[in-house]
Image (tube, rainbow, N blue to C red; front, top):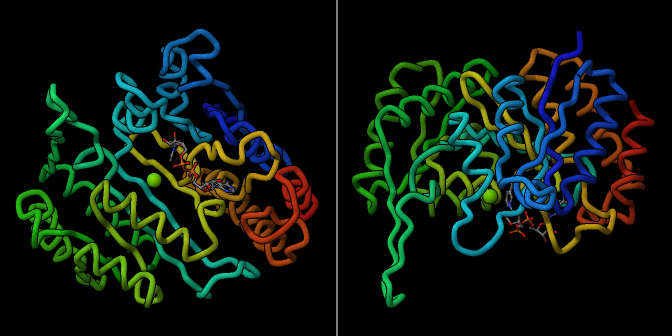
Length: 334
Ligand code: NAI
Ligand code: MG
């Protein structure tokens, strides 16, 4: 029987690149039963709530989500749908792999870096955001717990071990944020002792950013807290060709959600020029996750080949292709 998955097409460039991805999944006969649901602006437009109950029920039922980017409406009262879903389903690990692609103009070749970002707490969680009445003072709450730190650090070391990686780099700012980042670093040192087979490395996040630009080949798996992971993973995407090629997985114990690292790209929405690679590669991560590495591998091979040929790549990769023509090329390859 087909495996049910929840598909959230999103808004902006989302629907185009998710539809492209579904065409690819259909081409490899991935055996998935798509349950379409909305969140964010698309849900509001349909007269629903920001996060409709039907969407939450579907995610709870399928435990597997393929998601396009969703715009966070600006203005007070709207929290990020993305952050809300990650919290709601306890998707505590955000895994963002970047791999050099042949034919992509970049300063580097042969990079293969996985950022593992804590996804539920810390500065990025949006907790305690207040501005004083006269607008002169703003506050935010940053909470780091031992439990969450242990969970994400173990996840990262386990992932490194399972995938035969060599080194785990912990990025922190414990020299300044002594309480929060300090706790994360302390727990990291404890957990690292449980994995003597892996090299363990610590870097202060600002210097880490510089080193990623100057010597990215020094990095293998990076584990860090939420906000630093947000920033470093975009940086890593930039090392291999940009946001259009960077997939991400949000993983919990009972549910996992796969999406692009980037957002809804309002600047290019509706023009059929968005690069669907990020979501297609996210779908490949999803297939890996459900144990279908064979199809995941085929999809990656096809993407690499089409990008290497360069004929039909989208403008972000220096081509004149469209979302559709690129996807056609991938499908022909498959
Ligand atoms: P963005 O990631 O949407 O765009 C940044 C830049 O990258 C833009 O110039 C865009 O054209 C380009 N870009 C992004 N994806 C691309 C693709 N597939 N192909 C070619 N070019 C691509 O970031 P921005 O503009 O800051 O955010 C727009 C909205 O997306 C915001 O409302 C934000 O909150 C939301 N967002 C949603 C995320 C999600 O759903 N997981 C993640 C990040 C942002
Ligand atoms: Mg981001």
